[in-house]
Amino acid sequence: MKIAYDAKRFFHNSSGLGNYSRDLVRILAAHHPENSYLLLDSAPTEKGSEITALQGVSVVQTKKSFLSRQLKMGLEAQQAGAEIFHGLSGELPLKWSSDSTIKKVVTIHDLIFLRYPNYYSWTDRKIHFWKFKKAAENADLVIAISEQTKRDIIKYLKIPSEKIKVVYQGCHEAFKSKPDEDLQSSLRTKHQLPERFMLSVGTIEARKNLLNTIKAVVGTGIPLVVLGKTTSYYKKVEKFIRKNKMQDQVQFLEGLTMAELAELYKMADIFVYPSLFEGFGIPVIEALFSGTAVITSNTSSLPEAGGPDSMYVDPLNVPDLKSKITFLWNSEAERERRAEKGQKYAQRYTDSRVAEDLINAYESLLNKKS
Image (spheres, rainbow, N blue to C red):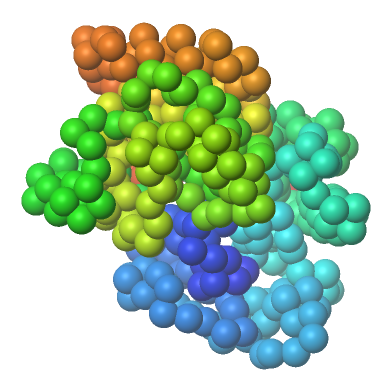
């Protein structure tokens, strides 16, 4: 098979959609090197260079022009002989040659902008909706990253169930490796980390709900380490920390490599993620693979990601969150039990499983009669 990808996120996004794009291509190239994977972008970068060096992966520099992704990328994929075009971030080109049989696939990660419109401007909501609906309608196959997202695509975009396939995400290999004691020691010294701590990872924005996590540890003395890109919401968090004199209890980190982030997960006693809504929740998967006990929300896709042995909370109920944090913090046996069970549950998100699900989806599409 020859599969073309819109690689804008692959080359230009450091997290989120970028990680999804790079992991998808890495997993497929590693497990199915017999195929050709074409990464299309008008300005490729060095990001993901270890993946572009894999067998079967090649970079196709597309022409730079106004709306080139929308109007020219599809045509260039067809000219390159691609049998499948996969849009990795909810979009597909608008223009295609009519004499080609190329199959179109689009991944939709979430429709949070419809569920929580207050987090988005009116303009962004309208643009997102138009792009996602158009792509889903024009695609031969829609990939949803969770059953929750599939339900939302059916409900909000009115796409029939039989056109949608759930293919879960994997995560970086660093989270699956054995602990690196030297790197952990270096991290502890460099950042003056406490001997025990709870970890929070994710963009510091209202939807991720960091403020309620911090409210839940007021008066407990439980150290909280936070890693995530800041937004204007951070000012609200910082104000609460100052008001409650928690500067020594809550520590913010930035600029970690993927290897360092993975070790931070493994060092933590608890990973806490009371997000209000997620299309999937990759940080939860990272924690499970790392062997760290998880506390997350009982909403959206998070129970799907976390499995039966993560601990669940109402993300808006601070006393609930506090009681579960303190319970798990004070019970080493319970943390170990949940962490061990969680690692077993995470095996459904292994690279080999993801690769087979994707390849089967591609092959069934090519074998399907027009």
